[in-house]
Length: 105
Image (tube, rainbow, N blue to C red; front, side):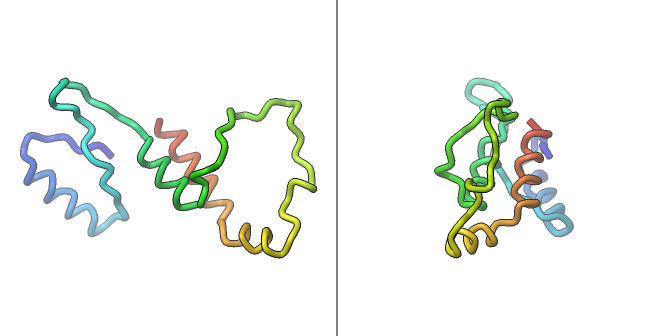
């Protein structure tokens, strides 16, 4: 949600009131006042998602995957340690978070 207004105190109060009813994160200002430009970016959100799911060092890839890429069983976690690490990550939450960023871009 983008909140716009001229009174910073009213904006702060609105954010405070909304946060009582909704789980919110303030991602900062959307306006570059010096250059008089409005910026809407998902960068901070995507960085938070990557950090949350321990994917900050993941390699970027274009989507959808090219047809010559095949997912095979040997690519799945093999050792108990790998399986334990994967069990800590909610697939549905990960994909949902990424799809949220995709839909709001």
